[in-house]
Amino acid sequence: MTMPVDVVVMAAGKGTRMKSRIPKVLQRLAGRPLVFHVLEQAGGLKARRVVLITGHDAMQVEAACVGVASAEGTFDLKFALQQPQLGTGHAVQQALPQLQDDGLVLVLSGDVPLTQRDTLQALLAASGGARLALLTVRLPDPAGYGRIVRAAGGQVQRIVEHKDASDAERAIDEIYSGIMAVPTRLLRRWVGQLRNDNAQQEYYLTDVVALAVAEGVPVVAHCIDDAVQVAGVNNPLQLAELERACQRRQADALMEQGVRLADPARFELRDDAARGTRGELLCAQDVEIDVGCIFTGRVELGEGVQVGAYCCIANAVIEAGAVIQPFTHIDGEKAGVQVGVGARVGPFSRLRPGAVLGRAVHVGNFVEIKNSQLADGAKANHLAYLGDASVGERVNYGAGSITANYDGVNKHRTVIEHDVHVGSNCVLVAPVTIGADGVVGAGSVVTEDAPPGVLTLGRGRQVSKTEWHRPAKPLKN
Image (cartoon, rainbow, N blue to C red):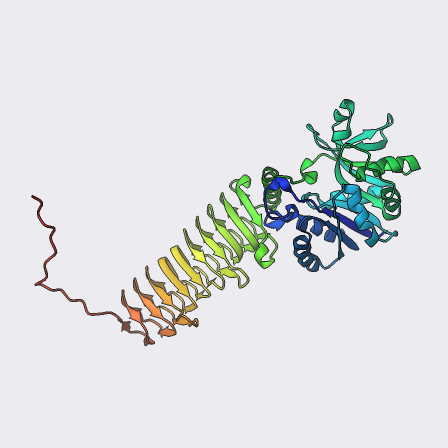
């Protein structure tokens, strides 16, 4: 488009049927508020300005959207308050003072998140800066939607809202999506002529169609066959349906790239909203993902990686040939997690921020690792904790052993040098270093540095008392 594109986003509704204290447009889809999906499309279209029309909980909605606009960095975000809310036409009236007449306005809804960019580009092209273009779709059950009324030759004449439609008009299956593209100068004139003499006593934006026809301005409809692109959210059921549609779209895209998903209906890729990380799953060749896995934020899976069932993986890099067994929880938060080539993790393992595993590292069931580096070939196979630790090559870290890294005020570091064997149920009280090739006997509490190549014991001597007798229960009468 040679004309600047300005976007108006309807986001004033309360969303009563959501039965939530959270405004409807801030309800989450794939981990991201609904309206963020819409603003992302505006950014992709290189919009000059976005005017977000707010109403219910306006301050909360505006505060949430400022951040995403800054992240997009491509458009100027403005707000217009609609109070009271007297219909869609009235909403656009509030936005028009912030729009310039040299532009083309694209009207979107903040609760319609899955419209694709190429669809919107086609709609803008259909307008061409001289026509009123409507995005429409044919539905098997069009109840509740505004109908597209055409003349005998097929030209669009007007839109009639469901509540104002006759029986014949309600039989029409082509509906208006709520999305239009129109030159600003024309929209400004038509919106000023809207009247509220209808069943709802509201100012309908759809009435501009009849005004355009009356002036001889061409009205065109860009009709698509994908109802998901124009589906809105009014209740939790519809939100759940769109979630599945969104996830299936992402799953299909991955499978087209060659990723093996055991069941695309049981796959999730979400934004990490708490840390502002977009949901992005980058997969090399021959990646296999079992059912029920949830990926959050930015995750990279190297060639031949296998992810078992019901794993949660967030903000992590997993290198080629690694196997993540079922029910493993990996969350790198901002620091990230890295799993090396050929490593084996799980089942029921937990990797926290700053966990870095080298090549062929084994981390087994009920092992937790945080802010620790395990060098190539190290093993912690079960029931253990490593926090703030540096673990050398080929270390074997026994079951039930922990690094006591926190003294109640500060964190301290544990260093375990290469080829150390740590027996079961040991406590390594940081700061402490276990020298290379050493052995820590099972059940030891180590509070001082252990020299290399020696056996270190930190436990009381075993005593067997021959004079001791096991207590006996009294005999019953």
